[in-house]
Amino acid sequence: MQNKLIIVIGAYGSGKSEYSINLAKEYQLAGEKVSLVDMDVVNPYFRSRDVREKFEKEGITVIAPEGEFKHADLPMLSPRIMGEVENIESTVILDVGGDPAGCRTLARYVANAKKRGYEMHLVINTKRPFTSVKDEIISMLNMLEGSSNLRVSELVCNTNLMEFTDKEVVENGIKIVQEVAEEKNLKFEKYLVLFKFETVVPDGLLNKERKVLKYFLNKPWEIQDKVYHSGI
Image 1: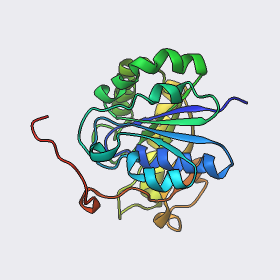
Image 2: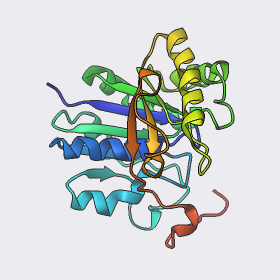
Image 3: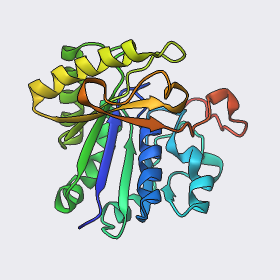
């Protein structure tokens, strides 16, 4: 079976980068060759590029700005991305910025993505602004699809409230995402839980599968070598 091309999108604070990183690790542990591509030109923090050195030691290719631009808040895309989109020898995961400007970066890869075949996962945290109810989520989904010229194939619930996350918070999020899935006729099978809430939020809520995420990304104040470019 041909290796997958998985495009991950989501609004700011949705957890899409953590999901992308954990997804890459999941496929690698299953014995697959994996490439993780950082296409997030919107959010200068919590980017998948932060795990480059660790993952490449483990055999996962990470495509992202390098050197002094590793943490720069610049709209930079590696010329290697097209090769990865076309690379059917690997499972390829694209971590894409979560607003229309971010999704427009996909434009140059649309033809090749459609030719290869792709999945596009929309990660949703219903405890974030603009994705708290069904109509807001559908509005954002339509906007991101229009900007990318690609179609969402799967919804992923990552509803959390930081240290206040509990079963009720996650279950309510699942209910809202389920409403979206039914209206848009989209696949929705799993919800995400950070590992430290594994004992608080059980598996099988509302007949969905729980995916436990390991925390890989640093907070902005934990990054010592961040480069700031003023006036850009």
